[in-house]
Length: 309
Image 1 (tube, one colour):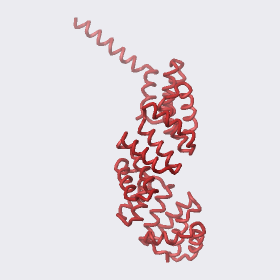
Image 2 (image 1 turned 90 degrees about the vertical axis):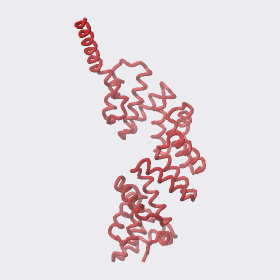
Image 3 (image 1 turned 60 degrees about the vertical axis):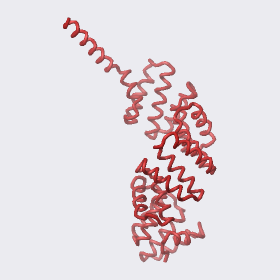
Image 4 (image 1 turned 45 degrees about the vertical axis):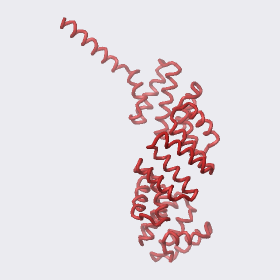
């Protein structure tokens, strides 16, 4: 009897081993594993898709997974092709709807995004992300109350969705509700300590409201360390450096902002101050150019506690 049981156990072990060595099964697991590196997932999904062993539904699922991985890897055009192929087979595939909508939203194609988001909401899947994108559409169109309503719904669906707090904070900030905006940026940073958008925005409000300038400096440093191209973070750091008499540092911050936005009046005026205060009278030219863009720029710096002369 013991011999029979041992042989049965051995047979089961061999079968399990055979299953674990099955390339198709291994690729299925890797393709759907969002914890794996995007390149690994793309390779596994591609092997599945090219295997010829999938029915239409399984092939669409693998292609949706591959589109998500390609988007994460920054391969936007191949990701779009995958999502489009999936939606031709399954027009309500949630991964493909969300992925295609997110790519189009990032490129500002709001009219093309909206029906995709509406279909995603109607499907009842990925609702937090769907309402976040719905809010982003309204925010970009300038419909701030509608944006806030959608962000509220996104947060109700996922209390940890840092971007929804950050973007709702942007909407409140544009409505003049700095207190509400600051509370949202605080919540965004609590949920994602490295969220550049929330850090940079919170820095600006802190400077404008003269509250917790030490934290504002930390926010600015964190933002520009993570994303040197973030203009708002560089500008806020530059203003704080001017307030602290750090002329060389301020000039570096403003020049980093100008590399991204050459005509930014805040960066021009700030660099002009840094140059003049460090003995370079040519800074006057920067300040005059800034006034050409914004005739009230000097008053704005006065309001931020910066001595312009």
